Amino acid sequence: MKRIFEFSVALLLLLCSAPALLVCALVIRLTVSGPVLITRQHKDTQGKSFDVYYFQMPPNFIGRWLRRVSIDTLPQLINVLRGEMSLIGPPLV
Image (cartoon, rainbow, N blue to C red; front, side, top):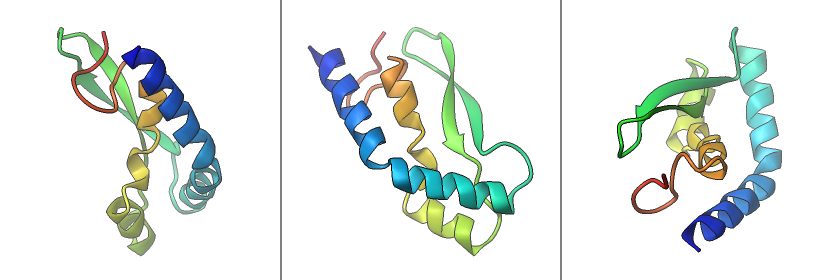
């Protein structure tokens, strides 16, 4: 039941934030060389590694603003959809 709830909420949040995500990706693409999305290795409660998605932040005032409003972490909703992370509480495994 928790998995269905978290999947539904993550999907809804991704769909609702899609315009902001697209604008953010465009700004990053225009100001930073390299990929728009970056990954970092994290471990779940059982010690299994997985990649967590983030936006690569520009090193200027735009990047500071995007970080302040936590837009760089919105791609982590992909990890919630994949069942690697949880919105609240311990990760789903």
